[in-house]
Structure formats: C-alpha cells, structure tokens
Length: 253
Image (tube, rainbow, N blue to C red; front, side):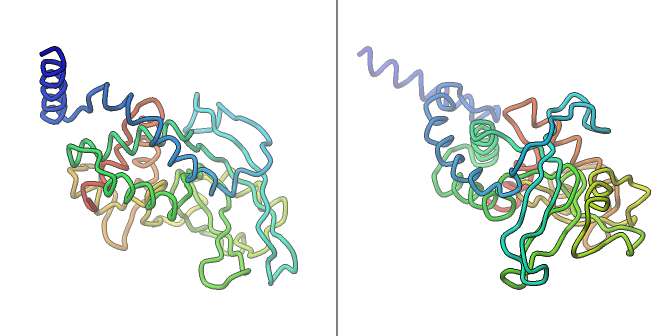
C-alpha cells in the first residue's frame, strides 16, 4: 500500500508539472547525472577552449558575467601552410548547466524527457556549436574544404560582417584579432547573421514563438537580433531554462 501511494503521488507530481510547464524536481534530480554525462561529450567538441588568457567580468554588455578570453589554434591550414591563430571571448555552459537547459526545454515543449527528443536537441547543439557561445571574436571553420579554415566573426553568439571589408583578412594578425574581440555595432553592417548559438535558433523561430522585438525576418536580420540573443542568453545563464533552446524545440520537436 505504501508503494502504491508513493507511485500515485509521483504521478500526481508529474501531472502537475506537465500542466504548469515545470519539470518535477524529483525528475530533474534523477535524470541529471545521465544527461550531464551525455553533455560532457558535447563540451569535448569545444575546440576554441584553448589557452585561457583571462576571465573578464567587465566586458561591455556582459558586465558581471564570467566571459573567458581564449587563444586557440586551428589544425593544419593549407592556405597558411600551418595552423591559424584565433582569439575569442566565450561564455560556454558547464555540462551540468547544459544538461539542465536541455531537459527543461524538452520538458516545457513535449511534457516528457523521451530520449529521442533530448538526443535530437543534444546533437543539434553538438553539431552546430559544440555548446560554444562566442561573445566576440573570430571563429574558424573549415566548412567548404577540409584543411581550409576560414575566419567568421561573431558578436553575441551571432555571425556578423564588417562595414570596412579591408579589415577582414583570411590570415588575421595580432592587431586584427584584438580588433575582432572589441568590435562595436558601428563597425558592423546593419544586417547580421541568422543563427544564434548554441543551437542555431533563428529570428523566424523567435517570432513564431511569440517574440515581439523588431529584429527583421528571413534574410533581412537587423542588428537588434544581437541584443535579443545577448539578453536571452544572459537570462539563461542564471537559470535552468534557456529560452533560445525552448524556441528551437517549439519549431523542431
């Protein structure tokens, strides 16, 4: 009788959690170790976490957050006849924080933690970013040719383009690398990239989920998207819930 009553209470707790969108604490506690272990494999792909140069809690727009400055190197680059050097400010979650974000997002959207759903989101993060959130700096990717690492510029987790094209160089020197770390909005083109780290949330997904900020849509994405992503990620950093991931789940699960 005791076990039957416990099971009934647990079911009622799960039902209440599903109704108000909140995951039962017992489910979070029981599922967290296994999910954290799965997320450790994601963070192992964080190739930009090279040499830690500093932890900066005074970075403009990110005051109070432990943004980390890393120096890193690519693999052998065929155009440079050697590895390329990069510098980037990152605010990457721990495996446990990432696990909580994944579970909370899936629960909120699906009302369960089925493996197929948590794994789809986990793999999306793994393949899109390795759970790396570039606050500012250069991100090298060999997207089109193996061994040919091209520098992409990021600010607030979104790719950006410079107004002055002469400042973009496939082989940036130390001066340019430092400039990329400190890019201002005035240095950037008015339109920015579509996909927001760490799971490639798009402006159209944000709007479809009820977002109200004027960020543009389609291929015409305004700079304000950088502000929206920054504020949502900052909010997530102090929470078990990452709205950018919830938005992606609503569009893809």
